[in-house]
Image (cartoon, rainbow, N blue to C red; front, side, top):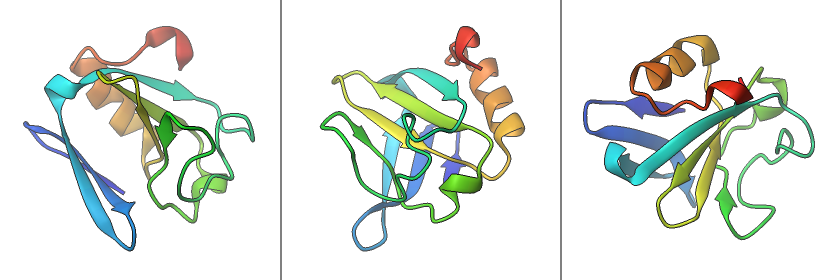
Length: 103
């Protein structure tokens, strides 16, 4: 669903029909991990429910244990899910991007 490298994060299946979006670390101001709910986008399979957050395609999002939000410097954010949230959250913690109070 995502790919993490030294340069940044690639969000797979971001664009229609299946294009990826690469975001450099310098563009990500913070990452927030939330419990899945209708309010946080657990049923938002692909697209946006508002003008500021976009969700890449994940048909299994309703079954994921966390929804993560990458705040970008332009005021927008990317809401995304991953297969192994504990490992990914740990990577974001190591990079100093995770908001501790929201996990």
